[in-house]
Image (cartoon, rainbow, N blue to C red; front, side, top):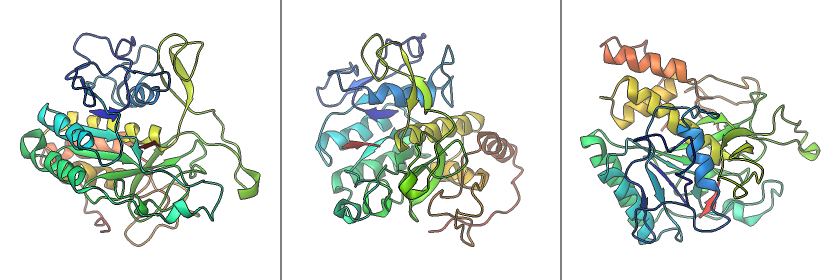
Length: 323
């Protein structure tokens, strides 16, 4: 399930028979999750990163199904909580959320928004707890949030920093942190996304413009000249990339609990930027979490667990703005 503000479910990547299931617009109470305004581009791009079928763009899990849950409401609304409950009650294995509180200005270290705490509302927390406890017949939904794009500590974001979700940071095509990406002890892992150069921070240009993914069809969307875009980015793009990887893990071993899935991600990540990542004794970096996703390693661990062959002991884990 992807919770966002609209989905182009008629896109060729999603209109394959049976690809889209249990669509819902939480805000209107209908089963039509399509975009409602010219600005509702975000959800379609996120969905492509996770599950585009591979006709022209391939998601991380191209054979996974898409449950599009449209949410257009203020943070902390009853609709927000209802979105998580809908997903859990209708069989979602994974819930991907590329949204959260307002980010501070990534280039202004003195922006007071950087240190403005936004708590996770009780209603949303209870809905997340419900999905983790009751989803997947008690094995729990895997819930993933974008860490944020403010170049700030995501610990001030009560959504991304909640202990039962995975916060995902962004790294670039040079194996370094994207300049805008949030950081902190709550980051679980990172996934490649867009970036841009910024001389005042001595940050070089990336090698590519961004992530190639699905866009709204025709002149709507990010690219008015086609049905795909090649410059999607932010931690908004990183989050569904991890969601797709979780789908690969769970397809290899459906019996895994939500905690086992996230521990497999932890144990299979590549430690990028070894010199600048500031990894601690537990293998955690405030910039990259436990590192950059490695889907092949993750799936191999999942298969070994299914066969009853445990991998070698690993170190334990340390314990509405679009991103």
